[in-house]
Image (cartoon, rainbow, N blue to C red; front, side, top):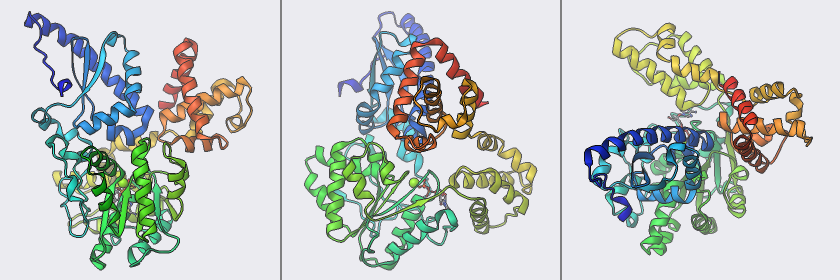
Length: 495
Ligand code: ADP
Ligand code: MG
């Protein structure tokens, strides 16, 4: 592929040319850092981590800016989903004026050193063994190019993610009961096909899905279970299409007894994949096979997914996992500590962590592991003081989390309107504009989805929120006073 070969040494006077390149590239690299930060706030953590964070600025040459990504698949995905936003942000950077943007995939050898930034690798813990057994991997679709190997289909199950290790509390009892029910039944459970599990990040969706797969594997080894992420489903489908193996792909997916697709929100936007997903889905339901799907929000709130697919997803049992409560966090910590040997953690520290780390279970586990690792390393007992010290950054981040309520209050106060106007349907400019600003800031400063934000503003539709975000961006670009206003509010809220 021609675009993948960059020759930096094209200049005649190499020394001079290189010196100049460096200064410009430094500025471009800084610009890219800024853009990357903006992409993070525009798309949120999940999308950013999967697709945008791995993009690296590699240099410029001959009026072109080169951004590199680890695989071709990512390049295509970025080119079809995010390129216009990225281009727009580059165009806003003065230093990039006149440059053309190009996304490249470094050749495999150059790629080796950057493998750690590949999204799938970064997420899969190295120590986890790949367990295949009756968790089947469609053998036909092993990627042929080495550069794609990090996206290889590896339906690995984490041995720690079992029902026994899952702590049940009010926020997850429905999801847990449904998962157990489906796992224990040898046939499709009436009313539970598909089972749709949803909840925010780090609340246990993947854990429950692996637990179901483990359970079936142990108790009904004849049943064929296929577990994979929606991203991988999509990847394989595109690959099968390209290698003209679509038929074999369909057969493979339709021959399983239990199909589990994790993080279905990543299937959004890609029409042909949705189409295939929809048909696979229907074929399996018709044959009375069990489907288990997870997502970060309810089927009806999924964005960028066709209506017929959404309604199909909501046909069976939809079980949500709510944000953790203090009791659940305490229980989870207690259970993790019970599994550790040779470590004493004072009750006070457990209570402190359960109070302070409220974001999600993944962060809670991470905090506990850090405290334990520190104590083991320095050979001193865990105390409240050492805990506070070791976790100071995390504690600050958890304290600082900005809520939509805070934003509404601050914005209402700034524009001298009532907080209740944030929830009203009044359309007069005096209240509508501040409301749009508050929606914009909610999107920017919180990790809430558009539908969630809409609900917080008196049950507005997600398209209203989307429109508000666009409108405020336009106004900020056109009107300096507006830009100052919004930036000021942004700064106040972040401090
Ligand atoms: P999600 O898929 O919803 O983002 P995960 O299933 O990956 O979240 O969970 C994140 C981490 O938190 C995992 O290590 C998981 O084992 C742990 N975890 C989540 N909920 C529980 C729970 N109720 N009991 C024990 N561990 C949990
Ligand atoms: Mg998950």
